[in-house]
Image 1: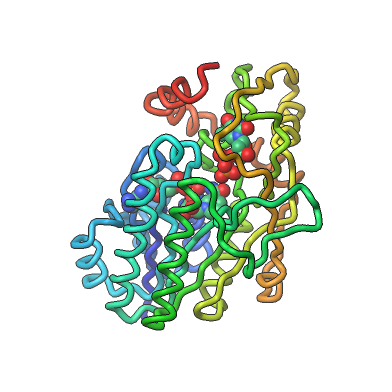
Image 2: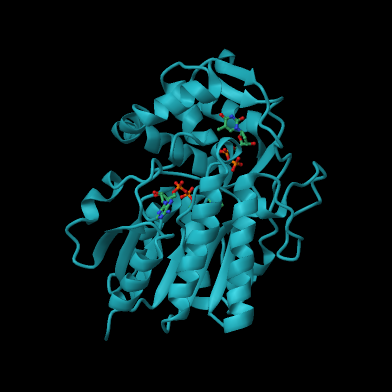
Length: 339
Ligand code: NAD
Ligand code: TYD
């Protein structure tokens, strides 16, 4: 049987990296191509054990480099595209929105054009629940696939723009696409600028943790492996042109998340430092995953089991995150927080 060729963009990042490993484990007969520009968020050391596999290939490229992307598609004739590559951090989008438009909007359009010129089976665009804007604290309110797009940050606006392009390529050209909109992920290889790994790495070192505003903003946390399984399902079973929300009903305030980590690590709560709130800080995100559940998806982790696994992973893999929090990251942290 001919091997299926799978292009994963952003496979050196957090979720894309987990997805590359998930797919290689689950489908040993697939050829996996990891295309990544290796920005500050990209790291290949996580794939050291894959380097000798004959069905894993790494391509260093910029998704907005039309010429390179077009010739890669021409050469490799991919069957599937799973598009993770993006600028992904809200705080960075507040200080420098431009790169978010270049990568997230233009980069997605280049990939769509390349996919359109070839006979791909499926293009999965990995998006975020942040495109829906924010919810009130009323616990009966959830984002569904019909919720209007009302992004509030430059990051979510750029992701919403890319979602609209993906939709348009389905409506106009019948490109076989799906859009997934996921809640906040956590788990192994999460870059330590995001709340959970930032908190773990700082608390382990007895450093203070910056909590924005009053810490009462709510996020719906999903373990990255449950996200990978959901994307795999959509890739193979998703109906063309459809959007699928992915979330785990694990809503927590930021303060609850930080306190869980501090308590698990046996450290004092006075490590918490309330800092100035993020501009335009969305109050609450919460997903209704009914549509995806009807397709056959069920998460395997709840917040408690997922956090226990994740904290243990960070304790066991200090070497990985210590090399990351030195250098550029440390300069970013000092400038962003001054604590
Ligand atoms: P990440 O920042 O950890 O990784 C992004 C990867 O994309 C990096 O490896 C980076 O080098 C690469 N990249 C950036 N610009 C590129 C370019 N121009 N060309 C090629 N590669 C480039 O992000 P993540 O947290 O793994 O998120 C992956 C996707 O999932 C993103 O599209 C994000 O919007 C979406 N998402 C993330 C979350 C979350 O909680 N992290 C939640 C919902 C959706
Ligand atoms: P983050 O991990 O940046 O994800 P997102 O903004 O995409 O939801 O932040 C999660 C929540 O944690 C968000 O409400 C902002 C808050 N937060 C802090 O309180 N302190 C921090 O240092 C960071 C990075 C985030």
